[in-house]
Image 1 (spheres, each protein chain N blue to C red):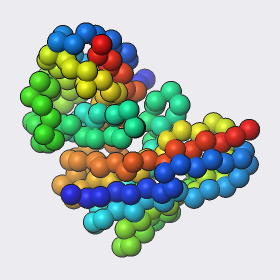
Image 2: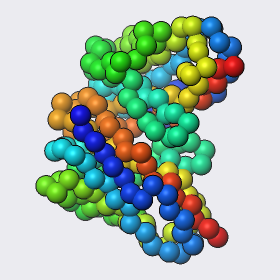
Image 3: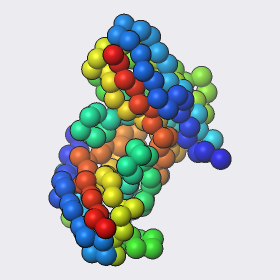
Length: 112
Length: 109
C-alpha cells in the first residue's frame, strides 16, 4: 500500500498546454503539500492545505492552481505551461503540528 | 524565515568508511527530519528527530535543538547509500517544512 501516491510519474508536454498532477494519501493526515524540486535538487514548498483549506501559497504564479476535494487528495493544475516549469513536483502529507511528513514518488514534468 | 544549512555539500567515500553530515538551522524548530533521495529520485524518510538521538541500523542521528543543529552519522557506508541527504525543519505553526540544500554523497566500491 503506497502511503502518498502521485500520478503521473512522468509528464512531457508542449509549452502553452494545461496539465494536472494528482496526489492521494491514505495515511489519514489532515495536511497536504506540493513541493517543487529544481535542477539543482533544491526543494521548495509551493502550497500547503490543512483540512482542505489553503494555508500556504509561496508566491507561486497564479498559473498554478491547487485543488483539494477532500483531506486525502490534493491536485495541482498548471495552465499555460512554460519551459521554466520543468522540474520534479512532490506531493507530501502530515498531521498538523510536530509530526513526520511523507512524500510521494514525484512527478517529473518536462516542458518542450 | 528559517534558514537551513547543510554541510558538506558534496562527499565522496570509499565503501566501508564512516561519515557525519551536519544540519544547522537559524531559529527554534519543533520538527526536524532527515531524508535520503536515492538515485531514482525517491525521498525516503530516515529519521524524525526534533531532539535527542535515534539509531536505525548503520544510520544514527542526533539533534541538539538548543544549539540548533542536527547530525546524521553513516557507518560502514555502502554503494546503496549514494544519493542526496536532506535535512528539513518545520516552523512552529507546523505548516511549512523548509529543506536544506542537501549533501550529495557518492560511495565508491
